[in-house]
Image (cartoon, rainbow, N blue to C red):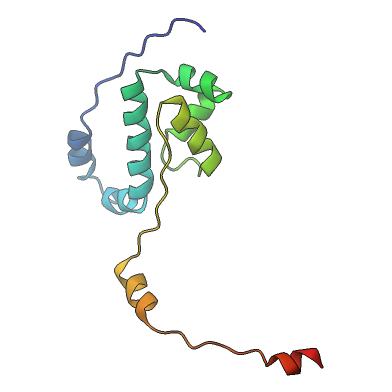
Length: 126
């Protein structure tokens, strides 16, 4: 493996958001992609902690730098769980997936559901 030195580019995300927020339609578009942006920030933070380049991560994952670049770009595609696991392993992390109920889902989950009967055993045998 070639000796690749990771040299991150400084980026002030808060300043970027403040400036971009002034543009028409930005807030709505950003809001729709907020979860994806959050995931990308996690990926980049993990790669930075591991002090790795995209090329190094790609080699460890058995893929190309362009694939890692797409993975680290919000809105380009939805990676599979397996791809996220391989990325996480390459940067010394593990993937944790949680299902967190929303307030509406919580209300629905607490309501008793009527059980639908499809017939008795005797009816099914005949």
